[in-house]
Image (cartoon, rainbow, N blue to C red):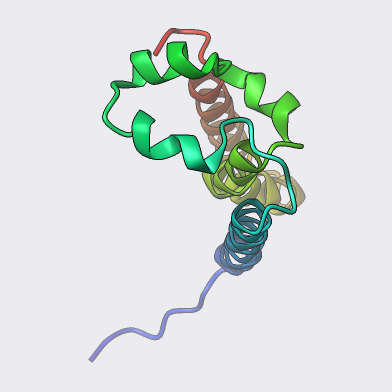
Length: 135
């Protein structure tokens, strides 16, 4: 017989933040994609031009379209082909939001080890997303 296990408040908090942040990211993906395909947001690269660019390597595509790289997409949110990256960024950041959300619970119980682990996890995720260490 399985022992009776309770779900901790930290697990419930993590799950709730994960649930709502993934829904938010998915909604942003849908809205920005619809806005892009229906032409509500102007394109950086015209949709009609894409078929001739599909066969290019990433490097050739970037050169042919003069597309900015790195975090420049943040300043291109008004362009439909860049706006969908916001949804991807939200989905990519879900784990950071979840970890940050459980830190107060660990602080309340003075669980310093878990607080430090959470802070280190967030730091590693942010550093890896920043691109500081290259590609």
